[in-house]
Amino acid sequence: MKEEYETIALVLRKIKYEEHQWSICVDLKMINFLLGQQSGYTKYPCFLCLWDSRAKNEHWVNKNWPSRDVMIQGIQNVINEPLVSREKILLPPFYIKLGLMKQFVKALNRDGNCFGYLSRKFPDISTEKLKAGIFDGPQIRQLVKDPQFTTSMNETGVHLLK
Image 1 (cartoon, rainbow, N blue to C red):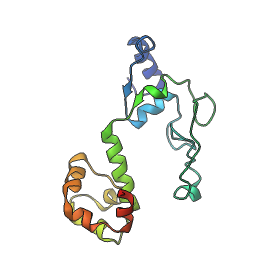
Image 2 (image 1 turned 90 degrees about the vertical axis):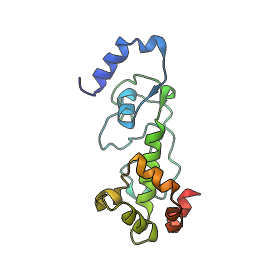
Image 3 (image 1 turned 180 degrees about the vertical axis):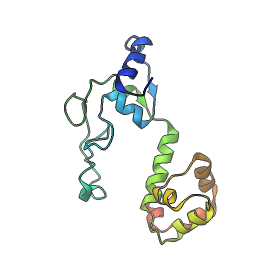
């Protein structure tokens, strides 16, 4: 079976989700299916707020996007009826950790001490992956325990950790 809205709806019917109303721990792709959102590069991809992915001039300036209060089919990239309530969806802590690391590395000065330290610490990671902030769990744990990593941070890195 393919990962698509109709398949997920079928599985939820078969396990009688409506009757049990369990909380569901899923990744971001699955959240799109469960909430009936359009996948891919959409104008409003976030399930929590109305962050405008196409407003490039506001991405690093606007910190307060309007919250997405309801998921209404046909409005703001909601193409199907939501299958579950947003309140029943849990994000796995590992995905949160990966996302934070990715945003941290993307914000680093490429010529700074911290980015250079990451390059030296993980020589097997390609430059493209390093620039994109793609790390795995063991690498993140290594960095968190490494006192040299903390001291190598430039002002951007220190600011993000406070």
